Picture (tube, rainbow, N blue to C red):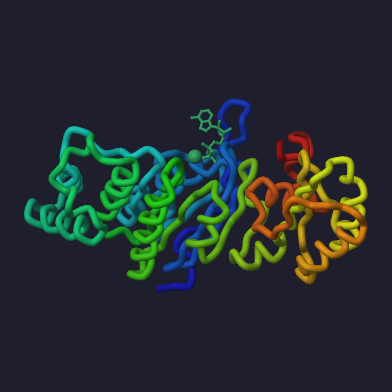
Length: 329
Ligand SMILES: Nc1ncnc2c1ncn2[C@@H]1O[C@H](COP(=O)(O)OP(=O)(O)O)[C@@H](O)[C@H]1O
Ligand SMILES: [Mg+2]
């Protein structure tokens, strides 16, 4: 054992024609933790996972997984990882149990071991009752769970989950989350990609926020949230009052509110504003409001703050000739 992170990516770059899918991506995931790679569609998440899982080559940069270089020792990496994607890769015509056994056999497990492992995983991840039904009749959540446990047959040290809950209903998302937590409790390292801030928040020890193929912020969920702040939303009864209300909110919070229809929204970075004060001050100023509330920032708002408000380019040397700074909308 060493202290080297179990997943390390350094300066990964990958182009598809004119598209820079990865533009110098760095990651470091300590063993036994969950890393949440958070980013919008097209940020480069899948490209990064595919390179780390040895399914694609980077144009430049290096990556090591479980102590082995992904480009030079792909077989050694493959023997130590599991991968489950956004699109479940299970055979519709087989049963759940059949899929797992087949995968076990394809992975060169002895027949008895493949059966034993299939039964154990079905039981552990709550698919026992549906195990002998054709996958064609499974719900989206069940398929995704089956796909996930298929990737566990060989007890991987590192599990890559590429948007494991995208498109799932809340209950199925919760089931996937429970499964991930269970794995981590056993010591598996998980790198998961997501477009959902709340998912990264609930599951990840550390979050890497990715945009345009590079990491634009890292930290624990709490640290990132603290740096971004909750949002204060004020819904106005009369949109004509927007100017007066905005000025007041600016005084109270020190930040510029954004106006969207009748809704004013402002980040609270200092965390000292009390809702009761806001309501009272608005009332005193003659602004009647339909609703006032605090909420977590959306992913859009996180990006707007991380990209729009960042005073410096993290890598001014390499990107000078290309894209505009504005990255949201
Ligand atoms: N095989 C490919 N051919 C061409 N462009 C690609 C290919 N794969 C990804 N891209 C482009 O690279 C960028 C990053 O894609 P991807 O890694 O899939 O992002 P994400 O998974 O975060 O949505 C996108 O602009 C996407 O269109
Ligand atoms: Mg993707």
